[in-house]
Image (cartoon, rainbow, N blue to C red):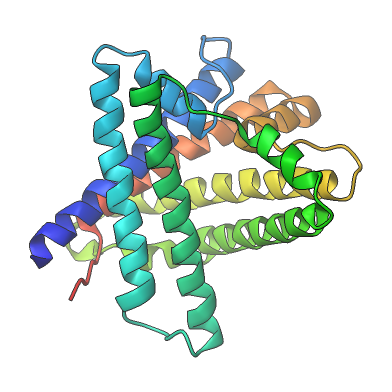
Length: 258
């Protein structure tokens, strides 16, 4: 049973890597005038749907994302390390729960695109509905702060090398370790940049001074408008590097499932 759980977890990591690979590649292509388009998770799903056997690809991806959700929730509820009663453990395990919810929802969206042909209402409409409530700005501001914390943590992982704790490097040769380190440093830095911009834009929406709730696409728009298409393309390629890290992790992750 543990072997099946482990395979499911590794499959989930591959699925997450695929999402980031598609987002990064499509956005980088747009940045360097090679086709493509600025993309987020929804765009990645739509891209898969438009491919030959697109519905099959979406179902496979959805299964992988549900596998990743299982892994994150398992880590939160039964994983080793700091417990819920400790502050560090509470923050870490809460992050696992939220991550599981996010990727589970993305998997559900993929299934919905197969069944209904669309992903339903976008984030803009949901944010607009939220902002119409009296508590909306406060809740959105809290979400923005959480994403900002995520951005800081991702940047910390990039420059501290903490991402290496999740990989069993003993089975990697010198070249493999070099690729792992470079992919992790670049990938987590790119994720930190994108998350930081998303948090900034959501905070602006929350305080009523403009901004956008368009997620990664809005973040790429911001990068292009402020620093140019090349900067946007470089960050997008950083997300591809993160995908490479996820593929390596899927193969060599230190997974402990009781």
